[in-house]
Image 1 (cartoon, rainbow, N blue to C red):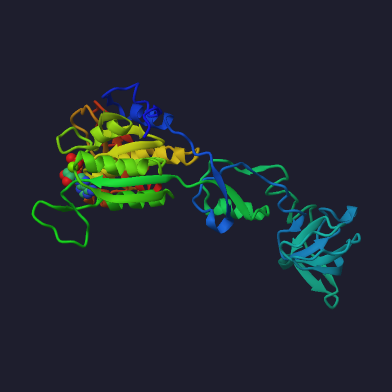
Image 2 (spheres, rainbow, N blue to C red; image 1 turned 180 degrees about the horizontal axis):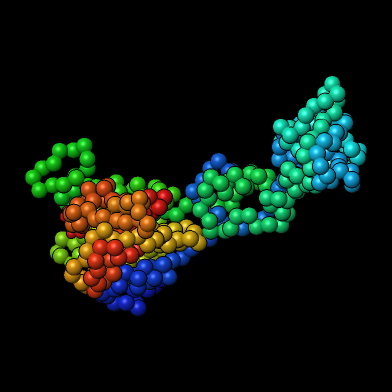
Length: 421
Ligand code: AMP
Ligand code: MG
């Protein structure tokens, strides 16, 4: 066990009452980005974080090609943009995947979408505009014809040497398709990060078992596992750990050498049933933050050996909200993701905010996009134990500290569907 790692910034902010912004900045500044990469085949790379810039070795398309099924034509000087009624002799046929012979002046070749425009051809006319005449040996076109019509030039999409995908991007289907289009069959991605989790609370019962008096079903375990799976983490789950110092120590110790990050829920307050804080302090370093936000005031951040540690509050809404607002950007940055901050945009509040509050509130709201700007309404019960509010909501409205406003005020909206990717 090692105590020497101080990357959590624990020395800087002892026992702090922190603003949301300061907490996020401190967390993300402490991140040690993964450096190890692995090579994956394209089909296995979805959702992974690209470990290198991808540069194209080829032009796409690699040759001038037809954008239409039609006729490639070698227009003579005097035929360019002149009134219609010009005919051309058909001297070739070029399906996609083949190459045609050089086209002589005044001649046409039947050509199909994607087929290379033959040498000599200087325009392509779509088949609907060409009339076959003289026993299908010629075509006639009844409108002025310009140079370069319906030709997709070489390198139109990508040029040799272009950086087409940037290191640190989370690979989406279109990124993988683009890699394929330049002929890559594997991609170098950062290794998955390892996250160890466990859940404190002697009242917790695993779903499927009967509740005895005073017990509740564990929901945080499922929320956290699902959110970590969404983020593509490698999870080691110790499930429930008894509310004793010894059990908490054993759990933390068993994870610390195996994980990049350890996350727990519950037990981070300072009651005598809360053993996470003393246990982390014994094995490493910890700062217990009282973040000026609602829901989710207590958040613990520390370091045990090589593992970062984040202790989330126990209340189910607080656990999810603090995970999404703090742990998620921390994890994404650790994974090598450059775009690790949560997306938000302005919407109009559909409610008044009567009293200034000392804590920033992340109100569970539903989004109505039928107005401009879009507006949000709040769930009537905003308690940190009301998990239904998370299911009902489309996202969080961020209400600044010490503010009052009337309905119509613009507030930041954090969409849940973005945060659950
Ligand atoms: P704690 O932070 O341990 O004091 O817990 C705060 C509240 O969250 C208590 O009402 C706990 O019963 C509840 N809680 C803690 N852990 C969980 C969990 N895994 N699932 C559901 N509720 C929990
Ligand atoms: Mg507890």
